[in-house]
Length: 98
Image (cartoon, rainbow, N blue to C red; front, top):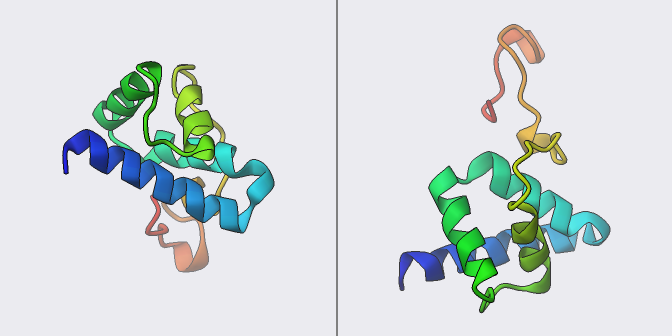
Protein backbone atom coordinates (compact mmCIF):
# COMPACT_ATOMS: atom_id res chain seq x y z
CA UNK A 1 0.00 0.00 0.00
CA UNK A 2 1.46 3.36 -1.04
CA UNK A 3 1.64 6.41 1.22
CA UNK A 4 -1.18 8.02 -0.73
CA UNK A 5 -3.33 4.90 -0.38
CA UNK A 6 -2.75 5.04 3.39
CA UNK A 7 -3.74 8.71 3.53
CA UNK A 8 -6.96 8.03 1.60
CA UNK A 9 -7.70 5.11 3.91
CA UNK A 10 -7.07 7.21 7.03
CA UNK A 11 -9.13 10.17 5.77
CA UNK A 12 -12.02 7.81 5.06
CA UNK A 13 -11.69 6.22 8.52
CA UNK A 14 -11.83 9.62 10.22
CA UNK A 15 -14.80 10.67 8.10
CA UNK A 16 -16.62 7.42 8.87
CA UNK A 17 -16.08 7.86 12.61
CA UNK A 18 -17.45 11.40 12.59
CA UNK A 19 -20.36 10.38 10.36
CA UNK A 20 -21.44 7.94 13.06
CA UNK A 21 -21.07 10.46 15.86
CA UNK A 22 -22.38 13.62 14.25
CA UNK A 23 -23.64 13.14 10.70
CA UNK A 24 -24.68 16.76 10.11
CA UNK A 25 -21.22 18.20 10.66
CA UNK A 26 -19.02 15.20 9.91
CA UNK A 27 -17.17 17.00 7.09
CA UNK A 28 -16.35 19.95 9.38
CA UNK A 29 -15.15 17.65 12.16
CA UNK A 30 -13.07 15.65 9.68
CA UNK A 31 -11.52 18.83 8.28
CA UNK A 32 -10.76 19.98 11.83
CA UNK A 33 -9.03 16.68 12.57
CA UNK A 34 -6.98 16.74 9.36
CA UNK A 35 -5.92 20.34 10.00
CA UNK A 36 -4.89 19.87 13.63
CA UNK A 37 -3.44 16.36 13.61
CA UNK A 38 -2.01 15.70 10.17
CA UNK A 39 1.48 16.84 9.27
CA UNK A 40 1.44 19.64 6.64
CA UNK A 41 3.07 17.25 4.16
CA UNK A 42 0.23 14.78 4.63
CA UNK A 43 -2.33 17.55 4.09
CA UNK A 44 -0.54 18.71 0.94
CA UNK A 45 -0.42 15.19 -0.46
CA UNK A 46 -4.12 14.45 0.15
CA UNK A 47 -5.11 17.87 -1.19
CA UNK A 48 -3.10 17.30 -4.38
CA UNK A 49 -4.82 13.91 -4.69
CA UNK A 50 -8.22 15.60 -4.29
CA UNK A 51 -7.35 18.17 -6.95
CA UNK A 52 -6.40 15.30 -9.28
CA UNK A 53 -9.84 13.72 -8.87
CA UNK A 54 -9.75 12.31 -5.35
CA UNK A 55 -10.15 8.66 -6.28
CA UNK A 56 -11.20 6.55 -3.32
CA UNK A 57 -12.23 9.39 -1.02
CA UNK A 58 -15.70 9.13 0.51
CA UNK A 59 -18.07 12.07 0.08
CA UNK A 60 -17.40 13.29 3.62
CA UNK A 61 -13.63 12.93 3.28
CA UNK A 62 -13.75 14.64 -0.12
CA UNK A 63 -15.62 17.64 1.36
CA UNK A 64 -13.18 17.85 4.28
CA UNK A 65 -10.10 17.64 2.07
CA UNK A 66 -11.46 20.31 -0.28
CA UNK A 67 -11.57 22.71 2.65
CA UNK A 68 -7.84 22.20 3.26
CA UNK A 69 -7.25 24.40 0.20
CA UNK A 70 -8.34 27.42 2.26
CA UNK A 71 -5.26 28.38 4.30
CA UNK A 72 -6.98 29.34 7.56
CA UNK A 73 -6.65 27.61 10.90
CA UNK A 74 -10.06 26.43 12.03
CA UNK A 75 -11.51 27.03 15.45
CA UNK A 76 -11.68 23.72 17.32
CA UNK A 77 -14.74 21.65 16.35
CA UNK A 78 -14.08 18.67 18.61
CA UNK A 79 -12.90 18.32 22.21
CA UNK A 80 -9.78 16.57 20.95
CA UNK A 81 -8.58 19.79 19.29
CA UNK A 82 -9.41 22.16 22.15
CA UNK A 83 -5.99 22.58 23.68
CA UNK A 84 -5.53 23.96 27.16
CA UNK A 85 -2.64 25.92 28.60
CA UNK A 86 -0.37 24.96 31.52
CA UNK A 87 -2.30 25.30 34.76
CA UNK A 88 -5.73 24.83 33.18
CA UNK A 89 -7.86 21.77 33.61
CA UNK A 90 -8.08 19.33 36.46
CA UNK A 91 -5.35 19.75 39.08
CA UNK A 92 -3.50 22.21 36.85
CA UNK A 93 -2.22 19.53 34.49
CA UNK A 94 -2.23 19.84 30.72
CA UNK A 95 -4.48 17.50 28.77
CA UNK A 96 -2.97 14.72 26.70
CA UNK A 97 -4.41 16.49 23.63
CA UNK A 98 -2.07 19.41 23.96
